[in-house]
Structures are given as structure tokens and as C-alpha cells.
Length: 411
Ligand code: NIG
Ligand code: FE
Image (cartoon, rainbow, N blue to C red):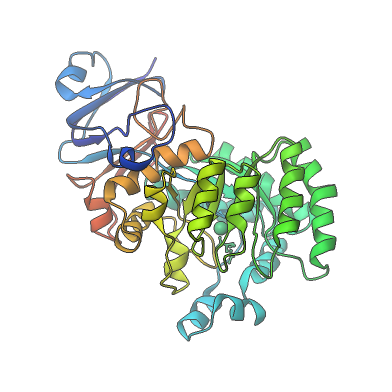
């Protein structure tokens, strides 16, 4: 039996609370313990409390002194596109010159250019790049990520990406929750209708029979997949036992949030263009909004999603990085906390609940991760600051001191 004790954290942010996602005022309740400690046995949290109490039970445990530091549950990043080849530096420069996301895609950049690079990469090469991204996530204090396929756009290439995720999950400490996003764009040699048939008739059955995904997602957007095409794919996925997430209302208010509500999707993501009606729909369908301020920022837009209205409506808001090479090249959840506070007017406490416990519930893992409570996995991060609000405040400053997954130091 291996034991570990973390003692004397200036703030131990437990995020303990009810066994369901946090809504409204609950989002501000982080259940933090000053001079707090945790006792861990065999990778699982056994006791959480004031250091004075933990100290009495330490016995032969290895001790980590967290004096002057903040301890948080490892961040849970519920929306990423982690597996891709290369970068999109040309798009980045074009944007700086004033081109829009859609103009860049038409000019040969955009999702398709990453598809070409990803197809050209072998499974082994992709795994090497994915490991680099995984290390970036860990270095920012993230211990679980949802990861979408979607840069393959053919049966074999999508399977290749999902296999890389499986190998990555086994070979690195970062926990990967796989999502099949075959419907991320239409490949050049087909029209959308033909491609939807391929997704429904061939890809989904293979993905599920090989158990390569837990969720299915669709980029429901003007110029990508319309409401009917999205509905068809997501219904087929649901029948095969996958849970649902949807890229909704990112560039236009196209009804994606209403579709999410109708299908009882676990999440609707982006929502920059969602209006009051859409928010009502999410509420009635029990859908968690996943807000991605990193992509608004990196696309140079100023229209952030209406987080305050969503919180007031009682939605269990999640925030995530949307890590991808095109619209959000960051793995940093602290950066997302900063954007959430500054541009979406969330409090630092709300942002932390949204990136830990609520994110965990959106991935159906709320009983294992997302808070520091007895019985949960000992996934946590130690930061070099005394107050959790500093994480959102010192933006761009690397404050990670140590990261632990099931009680083992991984960064
Ligand atoms: O979440 N919206 C669609 N997909 C990504 C962008 C992917 C890309 O540009 O490569 C997103 O923003
Ligand atoms: Fe995305």
C-alpha cells in the first residue's frame, strides 16, 4: 500500500458538494480549506481536512509540503481536438492581416489543411505529436481531457486518430475521453449528403464495434452540417450507445442548441450565437453548455457566449480550452479562467467549478474526478500562489508547481 499526504496548503480547493453538477450559486462554493491537507492511499483520496487532522493519520506516508501553495483538483478539459499533425501558422498570420475564419478556409487553410497533414502522418508520428500535446496539458494542471477525432474524414483515417487516442491514454498519465467527430467537415471528394451516409452507414458502426469512442459530436454549422444532417448522425450514434455532444451556434444561431435539447445531448458546445430561446431549450433538455472563450479570443472576435445569462437560467456551465490548431491553440486552463472572468464575467470561483466538477459530470465521470473528496481519484495540481483567484489573475504566467494523477507525480 503506497500512501501520500499533502499538508499545509494555504488553500485546499476541494470543490466538494452534491453528487451532481453545480448550478447557480453553487458554482461559487468551492469548499476550500485553509491550511488544508489530503491523505491518499493507493491512488485514491482517503481523507480531506485541516492539516492538523491529517497529520495525526500520516504514519508512513510520503509527505508533500504545500505551504504557501494552492491545491486544486486536476482540471478536466471537456472539449479538445488533441490529435492532429502540424500547426496552422499560415492561418494565424492571415488572421492577423484581417481575414476571417471562413475566408481562410476558402483560401486553402482551415480544417481541411490540417486534415491533409494528419492523413499524411503515420499512426506512430501522430502519437509522437499527441504525446507532446498531452505533456502540455499536464504542465498546465489538466489531468483529464475529452478528445475529438475529426481531422481524418474517411473511415480509415478517423479510426487511425481514435487508435492514437487509445494508445495515448495507455502510454501517458493524461486520461483521454474519446469522442468521434467524423462530421467535422465534408471531405473534398464528396458532397455533404454522401459523407453523412458514410458516417452513419460505415464509420459509426466500426467506431462503436471497436469501442473507440464514448461520445459522438457533430459540427452543426452553416457550411458544415445542417440541422437535419446533424440530427441524422446523432440519432444513429445514440442508437449505437454513444452519448452526445454538439458544436452548436458557434458562427451562426443555427438552432444547434435546440437540437441538443431535443436529443438530450450531454453538452452543447461553443454557443457564441445562442439567444435566450436557445438557453431556455438547453435548460429544458438538461444539456450542459460548454463555453470555449479561447476560440473567441484566438479568432479575434469579441462575441463571447452569454455565460451570466446561462448561470442565471440554472445551467450547469462548463468551460474548456477547445485546444485545436485552427481556432484555439492553447492547452492552458488557467488562460481560459482568465478569459472567462474578464470577458464572460464569471467569478474565479465559478470558472474553477466549471473547469473541474461540472466538466467531470459532462464526461460522465463526476463520481471519480473533478473534486477532492474521499473515494475519488487523487488527481490534483499544486500551484505556486496562495489564493486560487491568482490563477485567473496572473494571466499567461506559468504557476504550476506539481501535478499528480492517482497520487503519482506526473509533472
Ligand atoms: O472547435 N468548430 C469546429 N472545430 C474547431 C476548429 C477546428 C479547426 O479549425 O481546426 C473548433 O473551433
Ligand atoms: Fe471544437
